[in-house]
Image 1 (cartoon, rainbow, N blue to C red):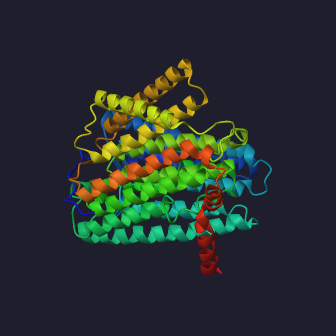
Image 2: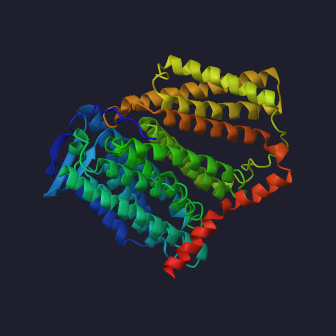
Image 3: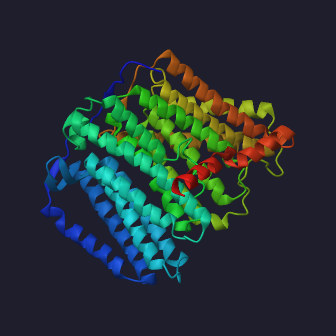
Length: 526
């Protein structure tokens, strides 16, 4: 799928430099609060963790306000040759800082009561604070060296949380599998780190983005894509994520809502470097689309709420990688924010939604959708989608990647329609369904336009000249999403057939890829 080199533009102004002493006082205060959490015990340590998260969130609000008023800022504290201890505060990092610190407040507060009375509550709280701190350093990093160090620190501290219940064999094997895959991602990052220094002579983002093309640029892009896919549980390295549910619920919420997004953030943050290789982006889009479809089918077979949520995360990460592969970086960030907020709430409230029929494999009391209902809902969704896209001036004629993403969204809206209409074709429900789709479509496109405007100075505008093969692949991806839509609509009618019952068994077990990787992990660590 080779094509001409992508055309990218980045409306990024150079960040203003601020001297370290201006920021030393709040940093010392942050360090003091974290240190206080480290020496406390039991519930006091857990409550201290919530105060650390609150302090982070207040800091995020202050920095976001500073960016809004004065523009991007770069805070440098120390330098040792090309290695610099510096933070970059721009719209992208401010958005992620706000998101992660807010999730940190929710998760740490939930953990206070969740582990109340546990003998190792203080240990858990310390590792939780270190994990949260590592993620925040990652999103604020001003250079690839600090980014890579925070990337590794996040994984190592998360490993301690995943193995919190060491007496549970399933938790241990899942954590070990995650550990191996993370180390492969670390190798990719460290190799890219070395090649970037050789090719550009610097690790600083603002210098790299000003001149992203350089020696080894194609290889660097490939390594960054590989690291992102390993980190974000993409096929075939996905099975560790659904297997990590033996960990405490706050960890699941933080991991699925925050840490799993590190791969997507890597692609968006380093998008000027990644867009130097159309092959790397095409690979990312293809494997992301396959992961999304593959995980969606497995998700429909799960009877456990948490398992279903875990496979949903794999599918969502796959779709996010598809967005990144097509160059829709602002849309991918909107997806990260929406998915993070939803998934944190879903995991922390999973105990109260057990009675909701989440499994879509054998819907109870609902017949298969009539083909005319499916076609009608698809036609209505297409009309609304194209109308709203025209109202927001989306350039569909010259951007086939945008067309593909809108097509997938339209299919999701048609799923909403036929689900509602299949129960009754009364006029009230028909009009209500059309209204819901119209409002949801307008809201999504408005948010997309808002994120495009917000992140215009942080991510490049990607407009490649796509080859015929790439157009054919995008059509194939659209047809696969359509096939899954039809599959879902006819599932109740097909569920009793022997062939589909056999498929159900295989799909409910993840087609046994997790079992295979468990055996490989046991052999490697034995």
